[in-house]
Length: 147
Image (tube, rainbow, N blue to C red; front, side, top):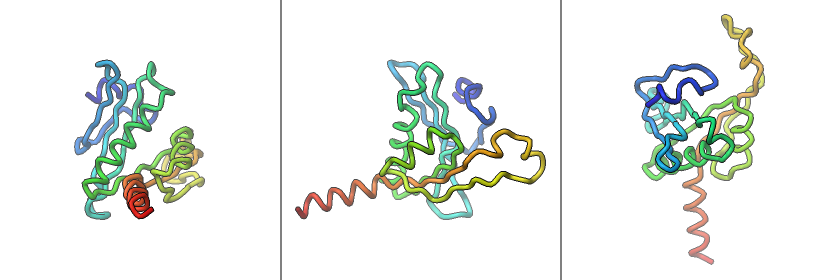
């Protein structure tokens, strides 16, 4: 499945074999791809969205963020925490505005190790977010019941 999406990913064309993959379809056509990796040794039940790709014909429709939120909710209702780290300006803007994602950190400093300083991504803003949408839904439901 990844081979179909790989050439459209902005960083590289590799994928970790431990990834769990999700594909979004529009009228039977593969439109969006997301992979999720466990984060062993960090926290039990912690996962990270590692690849997001939306096919060119479907970009700009919000499919990637909708699929992210579906996955966030899926993991959250199963008592798993899911994070994402991104340098994509559109995704950062979306997550900052969303009440379903909590900002963990910003990093504006370029990497200085190895040849990474020559990489055009080294000067991009990097942000980390955690999905909290399911918690917000539970809080809203509790508040609605008490009102």
